[in-house]
Amino acid sequence: MEDINRIKLVLVERKKTGKWLAEQLGKNPSTVSKWCSNVAQPDLATLVKIASLLNVNIQELINHTEK
Figure 1 (tube, rainbow, N blue to C red):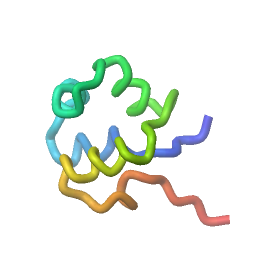
Figure 2: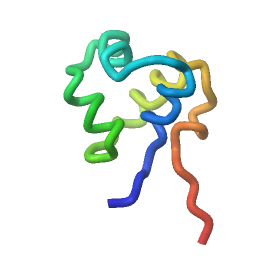
Figure 3: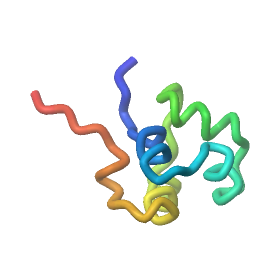
């Protein structure tokens, strides 16, 4: 499966954990883990919240592939 988001990488860059993100969003840590491993994807509203919490532009959370 193609990596669609970069949440895991941005968390590492910001020295934050998936558990921290789950607590901030009020989500189950296993849900955040699925996002970090690209097994599942957060909805757009959640992605906006993640970008805000990590103080990044939402585009930094999305992998761009040039074709």
